[in-house]
Image (tube, rainbow over all chains, first blue to last red; front, side):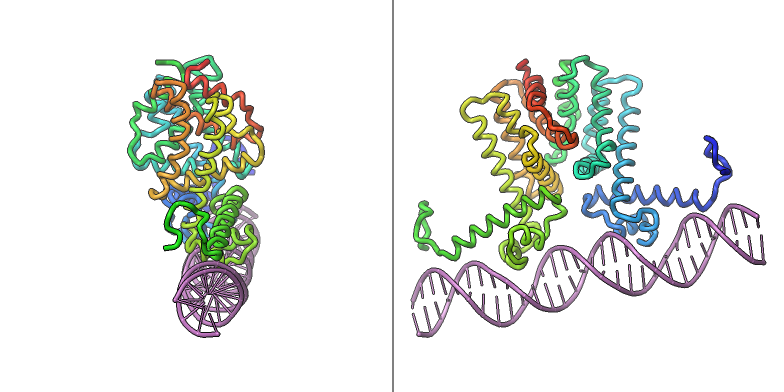
Length: 191
Length: 191
DNA sequence: TAATTCCTTGAACGATGGTTCAACAAGATC
DNA sequence: GATCTTGTTGAACCATCGTTCAAGGAATTA
């Protein structure tokens, strides 16, 4: 009853505060493991090792592997939304959108993108995760919608954005942001 | 040295013939397992159980799980190419292409599509599988190329086709083939 | 028929992983 | 300080899995 109202800077339980921090660290570690070894590599022990904590601690916060994956997917979607929003809030230029989606081909972005894809595919098999996974597409649809009123164009742009990511992953070469831009522009009839 | 030339109906070793049949049955079973439980569900034992044979027999034909997944991916790509070629060889209508890609939303097609996606994503982490995985995209690019000369339009259509599949998987509802057709037509400027 | 090759199969070994549990430390509340 | 809550941790249990292996059966060849 002490932490009732909105201000989170209430006098809080220090134990819980540290717990929340550790929880977040575990999720981060889990995302790193997904990037490195894929969803299949996410085990309590592997994530705990990545986070530098004992395995039983990872179990304490995420009783099942599923819980951990759900948390990781949610965090990944959050990060993605943050990134794209930041890149498109002021000027909704197509270049920045393309770069935010494809990620410029840097290795770290590539790892992120792969992780996002794996988690999305995971969501296909778990109805409870679908809503989280859809946030990617919905966000791209929203941004695309600023450039056109044609719903088919928007659908095309969204689908193309997803497909471009997959191509970028499958090709080893760095995908030029210019190519992504050209495809998005084509889908949106901006060329 | 007996089975040297092209005619496969040479007097062949009956043991090997049955072996080849069993090998094919194992690959089929592996694909069914991928559809049902995902790539993560592919184990020697699970595939063997699906095929109704002892686990050690699956090991005899595919010494490692990787071998099994490679074979499954190759077979899935073969089947996909066969399907799309069959649907587009005579009249290369966009409707048939759209249906071949999206698959009319039938549950079995959905399972196939999901399996193809999972195997494709697997290929991202194994360079030796990339070539097989690319066959999907290359085929769609070829078919799309029959409708336009604009390379950007082709790239957009290919990317959109991949993205549409993912959307269809993520949405539970059956995706209307008409929607897929509209998106492809938009990408190819045929509307 | 004997030797050879190919396939079949059950059992087992070692490793990994999900999960449980009990003991314990540390902060919060009385 | 006593008590309660929260977090921490190492050990262990049990299941699953990849892989090995040896014994054998069946088709083929000599």
